[in-house]
Length: 176
Ligand code: GDP
Image (cartoon, rainbow, N blue to C red; front, side, top):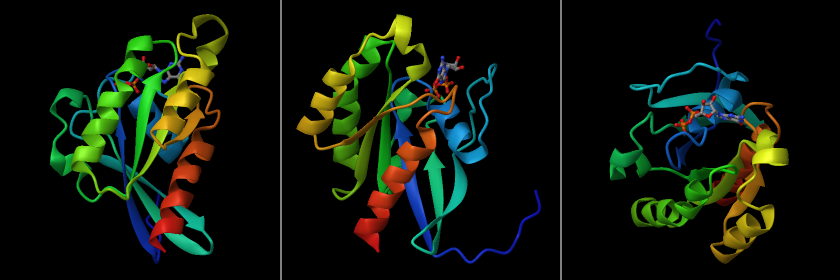
């Protein structure tokens, strides 16, 4: 794709966190490239991907960071400057939801207090026969911890754009 000159008004750093294998990398590639890659291996070395969107007539470059398979070694540098975060769990893996509280703690310890946080239950395409976390449990957690919440599917693409846009619009409204 040719690089066209763009006059970016804002750059928003967003970090994606959550247990390994919940689908963070696929969510990122779905949002930034509208792709799902069935045989993707961990993208070691890739730090972030971007997508530029228009919000209220302004060009906003979303710079979305991926832990790139280093979930156990996420450092404060990863969180630094993040205006928003997606905390992802897998709706078919209860333990990934049980760990969300820890990820939110980590985030609150290292990121700015004003960072917007969105809880995301991924793999909603498997809800019919493999669901292990009810929507009600997740909604309750999100309300208790004052997080935005959405169930999405990186595989089908369902709700992925909506979730990122919700997060980016909220950041926009706080920053601009
Ligand atoms: P990460 O370790 O959190 O970055 O997870 P990946 O993005 O590498 O995905 C882990 C596995 O889950 C891969 O086998 C993906 O193909 C699969 N996966 C990711 N998102 C979805 C989804 O929305 N639905 C389904 N069914 N599988 C998914």
